[in-house]
Every structure is written in C-alpha cells, then in structure tokens.
Image 1 (cartoon, protein in one colour):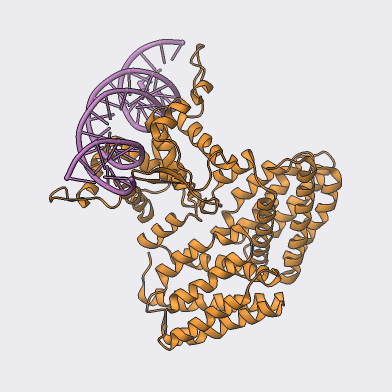
Image 2 (image 1 turned 90 degrees about the vertical axis):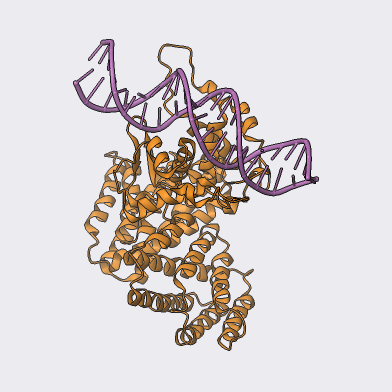
Length: 248
Length: 248
DNA sequence: CCCAATTTGTTCGTATGTATG
DNA sequence: GCATACATACGAACAAATTGG
C-alpha cells in the first residue's frame, strides 16, 4: 500500500513526494513491467484506490497524468485501458526515466543510441555552420575531461556538458530537447562499470576530434567524427549492460 | 464560460468532449497566446474554476494534464506556476497541435523543418540499409501522387504515406514517433494554398529521386535527395505562410 | 519560535451521464 | 426500453505545507 510509505507514526513524518506522484509512478510501473499490457482494462477507480490505499480522486488525477503521456486512455463505461507501448510519449523524460528504472529492453537501448547518433550528428553539423557557436567552450570540456583522468574534477559532468553544448549550440529547440533524455541516459547507464579509465582514455581523443572537425567547418568530417564517438560510446555502454545483464 | 459550450437547454445536450478536455485546452491557450507567461502564477484553483464555470476537481485534473506535459508546475502555498516555453514537451503531439491552433512563430516553424530534414534524412538512410525495407511501397506512393496530379485520388494522403513509410521503415521507434508530429504539420500547413499544381509537379520528381537513391543503397545520394526534398517543401510551405501572414 | 494566512493535497458522499447488453 | 457498471462532475470539509509576520 502506497500509503505505508508515509509513516504517520512518529513526530514529523511529512511526505516529501505527494501521493499523486507515488500513484502515478506505481501505475506506470504496472504498465512497464507488464502487469497490465496493451488493451487491458485497469480495475475501476475505486478498486485501484483501495489497492493503493488512496482515494478515488488521487487515482483519477494520476490517471490524467498517464493519459497525458499517452500510456492510458479512459473510455466511459469501459474504464481505463492500457495503450500500446508505441503510443507512449517516447520523448517524455519521465516515461524514459521510468523505463530505465523498471526495465528497458536491449532493443530499446539500441534504438536510443541510434537516434542519439543521428540527432547529435545533426546538431554537431549545425554547430559547425553556426557562426555564434563557441568552440572554445567545447574544448574546455575536453580539457576538463582530461583533468578528470588525472583525478582532478568530475568526468561525468564534463562529458555531459560537452554533449549539452552540442545539442543546445545548434540553435534548434527540438534538438535542445534531447538534452533531458541524454541526462537520463547518462544517469542510468554511466555507472563506474562503464566509466573505467580504459574507456575514458579511448573516448577523449574522439571528443577532441569532434571539436577539431567543428572548428574546421568541414561538415563531412564533423559527421564522421561524431558517428565514431557515439558508436564507441554505445559499445562501451551496452557491452557492460550485456555483461551485467542489467536489463529486462 | 466553458460550461456554456454544453447547452443544458434542450432535451439531449450530450457533451461530446469532456469538460476536462475543454478546460485543458483553454488553459493551454492561455499559455500559448501569452495571457500568462513564464513565472506567472495562475489564479488559485477555486478562481480558475469560477472563471471557467467548472468545479475545482475539473481544474485540478486539467492542471495535472498540463503538468504532465511540462507546461505548468504546482507548488503548495504558492500555486500553479507557468513554466518556460522550453520546458514544454516539444515532442508532445497535443502541445504541438495547440501551438498550431493558437499561434506558432515563424522561428518555431523554421526549426521544426530543420529538425524534420535531419531526422527524415536519418530515417531514409536507415531505410536504405535496412534489408527488410520495401522500396516498392514507396514507389507506390509516388505513383499515387502522380495519379493525384491527374485528378485521380488524394495527393495529401499519398504524400503523408510516403513520409510515414520512411519514418517507420527505419526500424527505430524514436524516428517512428515523429510521424504524429508530421501529421500535425501536414494538417496545419498543407492548405490548398500550398498544394498547388506547380508545387506538386516540382516535388514529385524529388520524391522519386529519394526512392531511387534508397533503391541504389547509396547513402550519400539518399541524404542529398532527402535534404533537397525537405528544403523545397519548407520553401513551398513557409513562403505561403509568410504571404498569408498566418502565424503569431 | 510560534502563529496565522494562503493554497494545494486529500478525502468523502452524492448525483449525473453514458455506453453496454 | 431497462438495468447496470463505470466514468464524470460537484461541493464541502479537513489536512498539510509554505510563507511572512
């Protein structure tokens, strides 16, 4: 019972997260792990409420949230039905985070990396042709990564900043919106298992190659450098996942 | 008052859309047209309810929907605050539809077309290297477009099908999820103003060039053909928009 | 440090509407 | 046409958190 996560016992229990957020995530979990799948009808609002120990109102509001994300649909008289996974808002950061938390397939990760390779390459090309783009900042990131290899500073932060600069530097808000997805990816996948010195030493020159290519303004060179960077990142990450058997 | 859209007068009034949907869209409109902008706090739930003639419950559920889409944030004691436009789920189909309906800037459209050019190009390249991809279907679309030029059948439908095939044929669900956005774009922008014979006669061979390039398997050729296709589409569409002054 | 005001959070009871069979 | 099962909608009430005095 969700409610039990808020110990009403002691002096100051105070729920940090609202019941709403808990219920949303719990129902989302049902859908992701497959307790309910496409076409299934959820128990009615009353029953869901009872099962989770919350009122119907809370259930209704939670359902609205998941409807907004394309995971559920409510039909009068029928009830709340689960939509096909490819109706889910795949670009929604919360949906993505839930996937990472409750189980994501290898196929999904492969596709995510392919999408990332494509879009980051576009972004890098646009950066290369954007006169306002500041290459120096990008170089700073590489320097920070290099320092991190010597134990000075945070590799993770510098790496993320590098990719954020690319995606935001393109001057395209659609590309910029991929940043939160990337942050999710980094958070979920860049474990100490992946961030080993061997990988970092290999990827640093790949990053620098991208910077140099952008500085040169040669877009085919940019594309090649970017594709190499992301495909190696994919290797380093997914190999470890496969080894650890971390996913669904 | 939203409520007035449902004439309780006669015998059978029947609201086709729920109050919820109406209120969601109304508040979304407030944000898009700028009645409330970044950082603004909405009137409290009670007041919004009174203003729209609905109960607090309905307002709350509507707000949940907009929070789920990144447009609002709710803080206790403070109230409901409007988030910056670049927090809004830019890939959300409903948000996009509302933008088209209530005002979209030319900059936004430019960026959308650029994003589309990039992602559709990736998709086309992936189709070209996907052994399961059926080029014949793509050719069918072109034939259908050609027939439409002679008054046989629907150009719009064939054109859309063409692009849908590309985006789904790549075998990547992120790319496939761009289809609903494209449908929005087509619905909103491909008016009879744009779909004039001159434009259609020019774009048909561009489509065929993409098909041929994919059939040949030459990815650089695919890219070039695709970029040409989309950039011309952008010209044809935005020129008309500019002429008509249709946007925000 | 506590008090008071404001606003959302949450519950409950009830009535209505709508589609199904 | 009627009963049923469910979502839809309302209103009142109290709880909890945050802010400012």
